[in-house]
Length: 152
Image 1 (cartoon, rainbow, N blue to C red):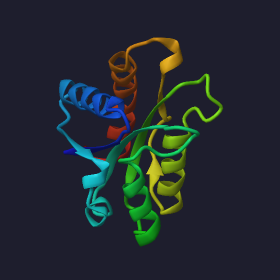
Image 2: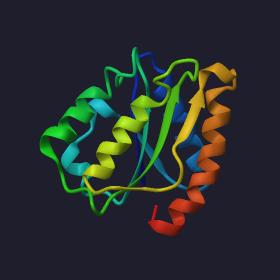
Image 3: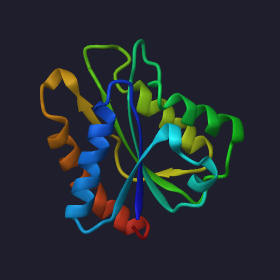
Image 4: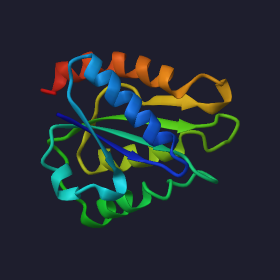
């Protein structure tokens, strides 16, 4: 079972997490969607693979529900050396801080020892492409890379 953790300000990251989870299931991979503010950091360190989904808010900040997850990771500093993760971010490329939310979170995960699988997925609101379409393509591309590196 793959846990998909999402952090959001307006609900778009939750929709993206749902889309990624639905596509995972289409690809015969079980997925569980978990809000980041409800995540158990100790449990995170025990997992083999997770997907992180978050947007960028305001002037490049983490969204309201991603911040507690980030703060808990930063404070507790768990050893994530056995964890692999994939990352998907939402934002708007007309802003200088496009993708800052997922990039900030990914940097901390790597600093704590986790290894990223594949490229960071990015939905750009400026392109007017539905989140579901971008999430589906990214998931289809990431699943084979995940299968090569971990048991999902």
